[in-house]
Amino acid sequence: MSDAAEWSPLPRSRTYELVLEAIEEKILSGELGVGDRLPPERDFAEMLGVSRSAIREALRVLEAQGVLRRPRVGTGPDSGSMLGGTASIGLSRLLRMHVALANFDLDEIVEARIIMERASVELAAAHADTKALARMRYLLDRMDDPSVPREEFNDLDTEFHVTLAEAAGNRLIADMTTAIRGAIRRPLLKAFELLPDWGSVAGGLRRDHHAIYDAVASGDAAEAARRVEEHIRGFYHKLGRDALRAAPGHGARDHAV
Image 1 (spheres, rainbow, N blue to C red):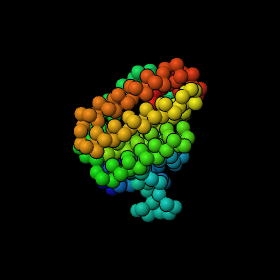
Image 2 (cartoon, one colour; image 1 turned 135 degrees about the horizontal axis):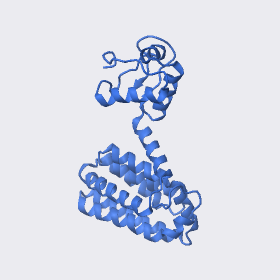
Image 3 (cartoon, helix red, strand yellow; image 1 turned 120 degrees about the vertical axis):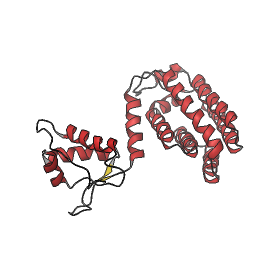
């Protein structure tokens, strides 16, 4: 498709932002798609009537967003940047930063998680294969070890929820789950450190996770959705708004697990 795309010169008063807009327009219109290559840097600059530095800056932004892969050094038909990259990673990174920086209220984050995770476990109950269930089982076994440090427990907890979302077969929900958990990781760990009885809280989380897994493994979508909502709301209640507010280093007004 890239060979058929027509490029028009851009006003010289604008720089890489207009280059980004031109590329985005080609993608949204369907003229460019995954696997297509952009023109080589020098040719691209001439086509758009901008400097090569503007092209390089725009490509760096797109690469950081996971929209494209930069080419190997060289010339020829394979020297242009290829669209596709690691879009899932890029989307997660962007969502994570925006969630961390935005002034979202704690209740907004909790409700967003509940909506997404109810949907993901319902789908997982219908679509989870043996590989996904085995991965969940492994993560549960790791979390059941009472010697697991709090930080590792939290990372395993996050991976369990992400695995549930991935088992649902919806990559967007999985990326959003990853992003939200990544955005709140540090304040959550700080809040964990303030808990006087971590053992009791961890025990409750283990029981919740096993109940969610059992419902998914048995194909009971309604029970899985009920369990995951109780799990999220219950943990929020146990941890408490005050503990999360007291945790230093948070980017939003409040956070939830």
